[in-house]
Image (cartoon, rainbow, N blue to C red; front, side, top):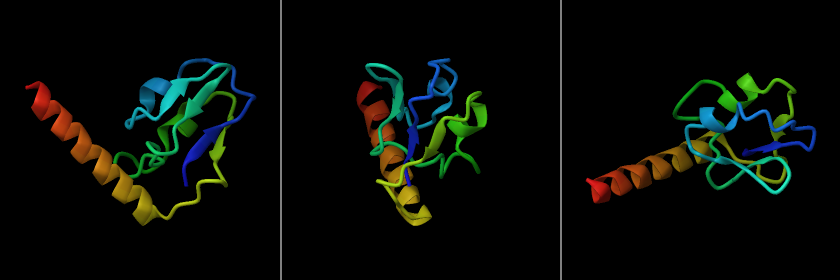
Length: 91
């Protein structure tokens, strides 16, 4: 399950830097989470870091993007391999 940020977001800027997958970015009005990059921190942490740091508790599970832990782990692995390939090209 990817996460999503509700419109109660106050743009405090604390969630974006803690996302290990760079899935969070400032949208037109509030921060948004790209579901194709969100792993709920599976592979990195035991709990989603954005939820941990959000002072207004506006980050929830996105019911439109329901995924199993295995699917999230597969995404983590795919993103990790992609990041390693990009690093190798820049080296």
